[in-house]
Length: 171
Image (cartoon, rainbow, N blue to C red; front, side, top):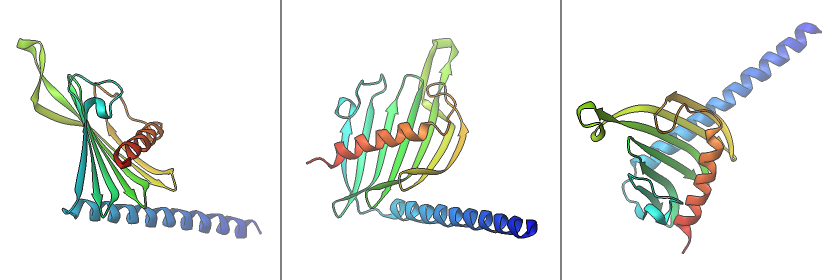
């Protein structure tokens, strides 16, 4: 009987893992399709149009629409020493994927300032969602502006997404 329960437990674990892999592959394919399309209409908001407080490097929020449906949002936030680029992907008006990149500017010692002309990718994160729940995350690196990423960031970005969705789709 013990062996039976062990086999059942292992089988359900393998099936659950396989189901997650299937969902991850579906999300990956959807994101690839969205990125391949070049026929979008766009809506762009700048600085205070979407930022509660403008940063020293400014910001830009662009929504990508196909047949009136929002499929992708790109957010660029510039800071004095970094830039964050966040991409939000939607399917059926639901968030399925967030891709976050943090780039740091080169510091010029002789001028005691940052030079935005030379940027280094120092943070690369991915959050995958299913039914508004975090399905999987991949967290790499950090930036001096954002710090070390964690799974708790998913909720913050989900909240940002909902606000951006409202801003970009209101008539």
